[in-house]
Image (cartoon, rainbow over all chains, first blue to last red):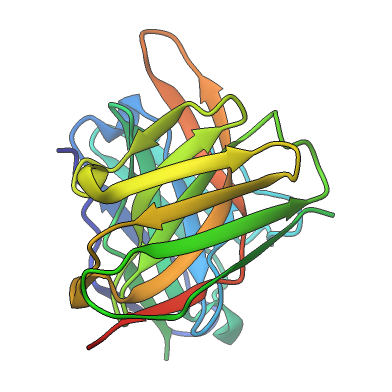
Length: 106
Length: 125
């Protein structure tokens, strides 16, 4: 079965850039998307189709996908961005989520 | 404005059947797929399965033998049944609207743009 691998945690200082990776076999040949989840809340889509932002998502969120790795980048990170982030892709009739990355804004 | 509202029993005993329903308000029901996703306490997201308005389903292979997702287009609702539950099925269960684009060569893109509020289901004797 297809797997997506994320680092368990990423730390960033306020105002700096955070990068969260998602690795999978030939992931660049698929479309990846990203969700933000804060404690006690439902996930929110922040990036779809590798790099597109839904309406209402701040411009500081961006995405890319090439080779075996998709990356979510948060520029000018704010305290409000502290959350869990999940990548997701589709493979062979199955939706697959990464294990999630906790972004800590120190 | 699209809203997904879900409900169902929150406490089950081992071997019972989990049953949840999700109602969709706003937007087109037939233009999307509809999925169930769960999240065990303190853990990540796990896709359970999906259905479209025609009743075509796909399930997570790890749960396929115990899962059934159905749809009621007259009410814009879809439902989840998970049989023979154990403590390992304790989780927050979410319903979600799934945007699906069929691409070339049997591949597709999809993502979840609207989610329900989540229902905590606890399995305990």
